[in-house]
Image (cartoon, rainbow over all chains, first blue to last red; front, side, top):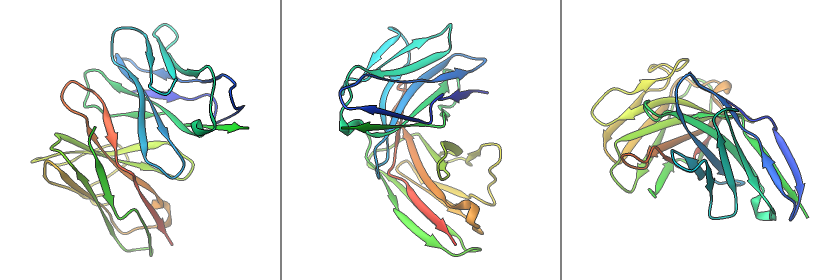
Length: 114
Length: 115
């Protein structure tokens, strides 16, 4: 079985500041890793994912995450945030050999202050 | 990416009644999933629905409480039966994005309040 821990339930930052949202996972098997974002009053959207290859993956809106197998982490970062990044961010994993079942973390609410 | 719609988008129901939530996809997909997001909490998988077979339920969820139908490759329903206030949640369906993508796309969710 897998579990995902997002260490921060809420992260307030000022606009244009850098941000890191932390995600650690536990699994006895190899996993794929995902970050999903839920903007206010909207559905869940895939932000980025790590399946294989380069451990650093990037989204089109400036976020990036790095898979660290030794630390079982997949932290999400952005060097300069915007008001529009205000949302709930969910880290998730799924077994590589499994049935695509996603196991989610508790979510981190990112609030951007002007 | 697949376009997923859910009906209803929200509902307020009385204790003891049942509600059926519909999930429609604009393309044929193999796997569909139903998740629950309780207030202030993360998403939890209820069951996996493949066309032509019985849904597979996760631990803590049973077919009598959450019956699921999957009549074709673009549609599924989830029924929340004999509701209680503890069933108040957002219910989301998702679909696999295609073979070898190992990615899911989510619908907008159905916000259910049980009084």
